[in-house]
Image (tube, rainbow, N blue to C red; front, top):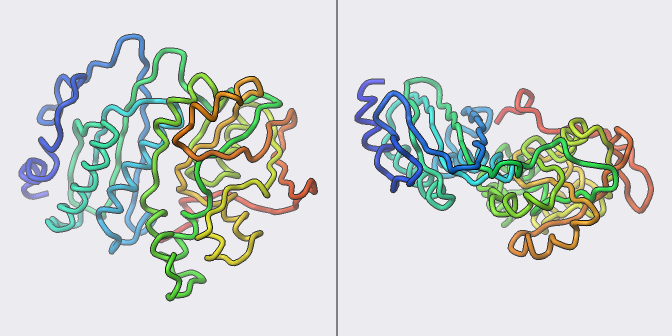
Length: 323
């Protein structure tokens, strides 16, 4: 891209105070960081592509939030404290008003979570944003997908289903233009809240955790597979917002949205019976709901009013959904 380095200097370099653990940031072949003693580094990479994860005319501030928040959510699911991020971005052209809004929102969210941009790359091409986030976890404290045991209770944070409803608004699927909550659902699709403090608080309480990026059905399935257990979910306990209920106007459909909605970036986690009493204090500032229990079998069973449900549902698939 012509003027790549001037573009980096103008929009990406020197926008944040340097963390004390950053030895060398942008401007060299590699960044250098100094992780805390007795800590491991958690690393996650995610890519957002125009036409798949957002429409080309979407608000660049919302795109920036979605890109960074979705990556920070991976750190939250591991109980990691966010520290550093690298960005690779391709742009079809240099659109300065677009970059101003994108970078303003990106650095605002980064500063809020104490995460520093330490490097990356810019190039010309279809609009694509790839982030690699890194965080720190004390030795032996990482939350994983593989620790759930029979009898553990299953919890989720926040509400579920709003991101899918927001996607319907964006794609104009089954919506009415005069519904005042449409904009709020669209906003929730883009502007999730990474549950970083909840993840850190759960380090010594939860037995397993995952963030909900591909739908509760799919992501809980990852915990079950890694832990070699099953689960029983009471769909009547799923946390559903009033906006979602008004949007779909059907309790059963709202429950199915909650089970399958991708890109929620809430946490799903399991807790042994002995640790349940600690949750109210540990998650005092985070809404959470118990939705079921881990079982000894390898199945995921859905129930309502103590009756089994035969809902054939799948998770969110990035290769099947086009925005």
